[in-house]
Image (cartoon, rainbow, N blue to C red; front, side):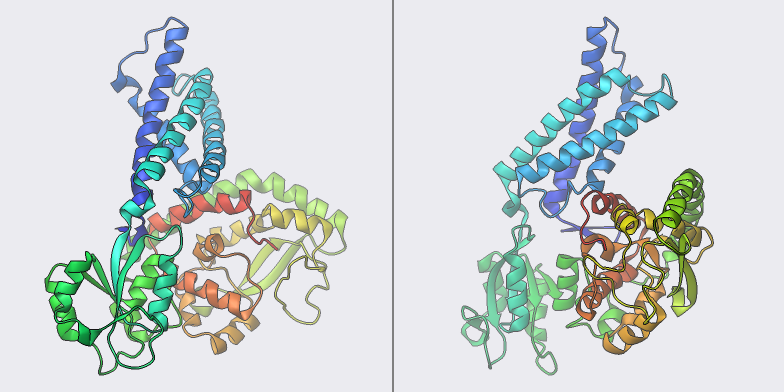
Length: 461
């Protein structure tokens, strides 16, 4: 994987994305030239139309990211790739057609967009055949030697077995005597020179996966491997990189303190984030006010009670604030106290099921973004009673409040809706990853991929 702005991107997906962007430029230019030739018009110089081609490629590429074209299945299934490509390119063409209508004479001819759409889909599918079929995802997988033969080593092995994994296991070394979970692990005593063993296996990375590191850290071995030019990683950092979340099972305060993250250089990023929140929330409130007003009336007609649901939630630094949403449950839904939402929750009204599925009930939260109590991107704010319970049961839960809560977030796009302590624990691992590695780049990825969650609902309740 390569790290872009503190976020890890698989090499295969990055290469695929770069090829896709280039092919979008080619498709746009071929469409322009073809259409100009059909109507007997000179196509002009490439330099003159390059800004328009770049705009087409950026819009289409962003739409592809938004619908999940570059997800874990990007190189696995042509059926998956074809369906997502069709949706992504179609959305981009519709958006570009609207831009062309607003900015007459400054964009593609709308008649050109059909050509660009067909050519783009054909070229992008061919790209997947080449990258996925000829090179294959395995061509970009790192060879990893695991130092350890216990449960942690087994977890790494299971990660490697995933079809979308970015690494393969080159071997295991049992560093300590005792119970050995990995039967094929080679005892350390049987290896004369660990550094030479790493070279013989062709490993590009060594991961320390010891069950107990106290008084057993193989510093001499690790130093020799490191000075031989092989990357050495610890278990927690390796899991963070490969899973996109912080592993609570092995997390300790010293790792959080000394690992990269929570940098003081986020001041400028925070200012940029706030500026974006103000501009985007103002525009969104302006354009969606008719939608909010319409559904507020429908909510009143559908069931008794107020149109809007207000509830205290926990925000930045644990400070409470009032969250506002369109009401989707009966007014007596919490007469016995706050409860987790359930699948096919009987408390949800008829209209509530629709607005929850379409995420329309979330729109009024934009006001909280405008006033600064929330951001567009961040951990979901929870009810104070839930927070008190979760802080007692889950380690490091309070650390998720070091960033503003958000309407969407890293946990929301990576984990389905949770309704238990176990689900809250899994989502906390993603929230800690976001709080630790926040950058505007990660915010952009999350906002784009939120569209994927809306188009293909993954557990909305």
